[in-house]
Image (cartoon, rainbow, N blue to C red; front, side):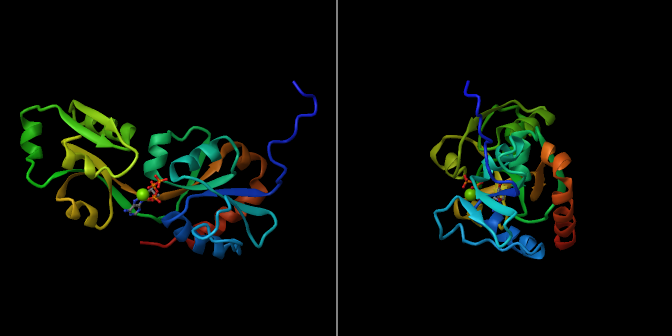
Amino acid sequence: MPTDVQPRSAFRGITIALSKGRIFQDTRPLLAAAGIEPQADPEQSRELIIGTNRPDVRLVIVRASDVPTYVQYGAADLGVAGLDVLLEHGGDGLYQPLDLRIARCRMMVAVPSGFDYAAAIGRGARLRVATKYIRTASEHFAAKGMHVDLIKLYGSMELAPLTGLGDAIVDLVSSGGTLRANNLVAVEHIRDISSRLIVNVAAWKLQRSHIAPLLEIFQQAVQPG
Ligand code: ATP
Ligand code: MG
């Protein structure tokens, strides 16, 4: 073991983990309310660590499903993650103080439009369900007393029933356009989804004087309704 162990990161301020796309776009106004302006656009830049106009605040850009992991282990102090991702992660080491009400959608069960889901359940058929959300799906079907075979996918769930990979999918739906385009219909609403502010529990205790004012501003800036 080396005796001169370096700190894992020399950065002493607040690190916020965000994913590209809708979460970054929808978090921007909340950051602006706190006077935080990113110095690069992650959609354009290849930088994964983005500074801000505040020397004590930086952003790290990670996969949506990796945000809770960065925050859990303290590689980021704060993050913004969808409830879908948080339910799969389990929430260990995370404090979840605020629903930001952004990136809103619904987690649904969907099937091909000709498939009689109710009848299949009624006769106790064992369905194959393809999803990225194994944990949430398994809890949902267990609560209904349904035995299903879950197939783990990492994306494009809507392709599964079209290719015979599954009878049904569990996926996020907002407008329903993707389902319609693939001749699928939503048959069950599992839960409403939005993105949450997450905080590393140790950072919340040790850096409260830094984090609490930010939290206060985000709280004020959340869109009602
Ligand atoms: P990756 O591209 O890394 O696999 P992802 O596809 O989950 O991740 P996004 O599509 O940017 O990444 O989704 C990020 C979050 O936005 C999701 O975790 C979810 O909470 C929310 N979200 C996903 N789809 C929708 C949607 N259609 N409408 C609104 N919010 C959504
Ligand atoms: Mg996506």
